[in-house]
Image (tube, rainbow, N blue to C red; front, side, top):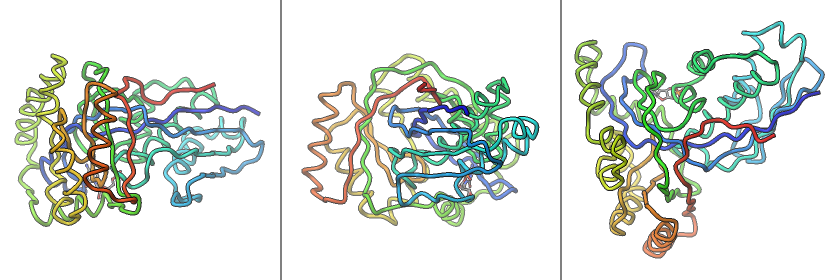
Length: 314
Ligand code: C5P
């Protein structure tokens, strides 16, 4: 019997630009991703059988084969049948702290932690790029979750280029407890309203990616210029989510009024985050927004940027 406990951190999107529609139904993206230290804990335990079982302490998380973390384990058994035969099945227990369907990659990071955990448990010795290749078969954000830190993500989100680590930036996150936004809905609505098939021409993607790579945010990150980082936050999906969900717009505006470094919706939302250089100021911003909106359904978290991806706790 072997067991591992993994720390699976959430991400926020500091930048999300939709470059165009792809023939495979996905969208060509240019993103800057950042890991934050709000994390799930994933316990993996060999169960001495030939089955995979998944449990989660959050009632909204599927506890069957549709769970992405379960699918990650199945992928590993298919990819490494000898290791599966040798070590047997696994119990996956998810201790959920990251809000679900929130634009914070909660499901993707749990799946990434199963890949990393089974690699350790089965003594496979996979490289980061081998883990990322497997991760890309599970979802667009899973490869980033394996490595974490600060990175440019292009393609569907699976092509990664690391950026310098950012430290001492605090994030105030806010989400309405009962509001969930489907990522597929957000992208398909964007496609209906702003779709651009021409962007799948390779040259134009490269040209636009180059613009992003040398853009405001990447250079602000290189210079560790926090004020500039705040100014350069961007997310194309706000164009469809904010008009559809007035509460999210109201939340975004409430953060803006507090004079934060910067505020933006993360991923396909509906979580809105704001940046601050001190914990005291982060607490103050949280209080100001909570007072301004005063809705018992609104949850807050305070987290910090972290350079690490999936970690091992034991
Ligand atoms: O890759 P993942 O399964 O996480 O993506 C969820 C959904 O988000 C996809 O089904 C697709 O509708 C949308 N998506 C997209 N383009 C991307 C990434 C995600 O259209 N680059």
